[in-house]
Length: 271
Image 1 (cartoon, rainbow, N blue to C red):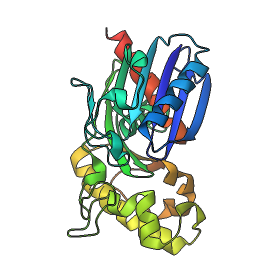
Image 2: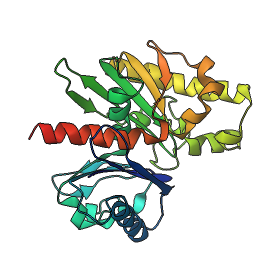
Image 3: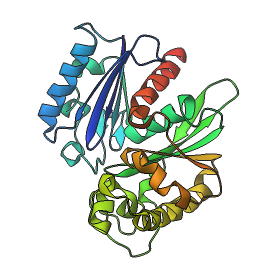
Image 4: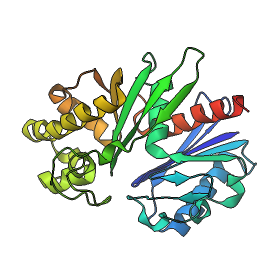
């Protein structure tokens, strides 16, 4: 049994798979703000999904930078209590024996690029708008393999000298204007409660500034919008403008767990 864990700043998903292609079971819950409690909940979820058996491999997605060589988290803006801490601060050591830890937005990008809306594109730019703003570029080759790079797109400056992002402490960056948290601060309402097209048009202006800048770095064939904000896609899609098509994620909240299984397959077949 294979396990994929996608831990976001707000929600966590744990999925099991027998074939690294389809999801067998999925467990979803709100991310607990206490790392020790979150660690227990994740371990309990894996135990439940594997019926107490040892998983063959586990892929963990976390909302920040990872240093796999040191077994440490780097900066984790939307879950700061584990920044600079070892993987074991939130992930049970017994599940790290056969495991791979990666940024959660990167796993979302891999999932969407291979089995989602980017399936038929070679260079896929994925952006996730949720608690924070993140994403990655996934490039595929003729042999069916892929590579990826993050470049931390949420920290690209789109408004010089602009507002301070609440989590990463950068000024004028994409996250400061396009994350769910920033949407609330800018427009005084939660995204899921907003049906005002004028508000969404203004939000999309900030997204478009980011798309334009990021495209100059990535030269992607398509942009895929994921994360919780993608659930409101129909309200802002008409306002999106970029040098390439911009589409909504097909796997939505499950992009990260799909990406975990896709990455696991590539890791195990390359050994």
